[in-house]
Image 1 (cartoon, protein in one colour):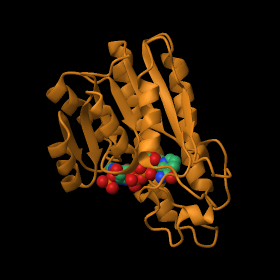
Image 2: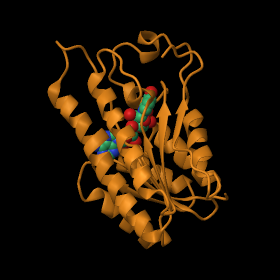
Image 3: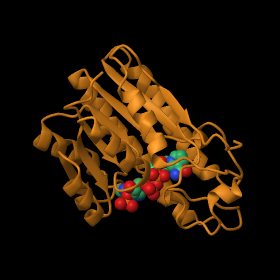
Image 4: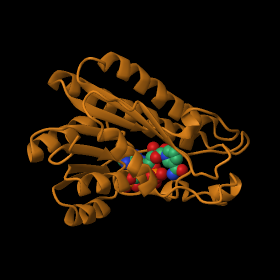
Length: 238
Ligand SMILES: NC(=O)c1ccc[n+]([C@@H]2O[C@H](COP(=O)([O-])OP(=O)(O)OC[C@H]3O[C@@H](n4cnc5c(N)ncnc54)[C@H](OP(=O)(O)O)[C@@H]3O)[C@@H](O)[C@H]2O)c1
């Protein structure tokens, strides 16, 4: 399927997986609405990428999903792809876990992602077309110690995608979950020891490696759905 002229909303579009996916889509002629908190970074992307509108703010603001769709429709007339990708990680042992940080992660990874997903699902069902993608994780399919809360948020994303996919089957709307292993991004910026060292991963993925999986999912012909796409570093012993 050609992506030329399609319109995509990408949350978490300032950096990492969201930005790499947006750039890969843009290279195929997709028009973009990017979201993140860092306004100046978004504006730099908008200046560089053709047909790129941006909205800065907190993804957990309940008004954000509708505002993103309204901006896309005002600027480009439609929405074809909605990528719920914004997220953060907070992990740690029982003695050290920061419950406020844990709660903030649940707010962004689950509450905000679900609001965005349902907004997209409702609109796509009404228009009879569209592709919702969500960024899950390999840790949405298996759990590791010290990361129970983060894994739980990604298991929640998996469950929602499964449910929405079944609800939307036969309505012309696709739902896919992208499940990366360890990717070298800003996600672990606060970690004292690099996650590749802790997890014994010689060479983590790069954001572009995940972006190729996103493009693979959205480029399929109308009758083909890729419901889940897991991408791991070849050396990740997970
Ligand atoms: N890196 C990995 O190893 C890995 C593996 C599996 C899954 N993932 C998932 O991949 C997704 C993207 O993460 P990444 O690795 O690409 O890290 P990243 O570079 O830190 O990207 C996270 C994105 O989320 C946005 N974001 C976070 N909190 C937000 C908030 N409250 N409001 C609005 N935007 C917010 C950030 O934008 P601002 O900073 O501008 O707000 C940023 O664009 C996440 O869902 C993460 O859980 C990552």
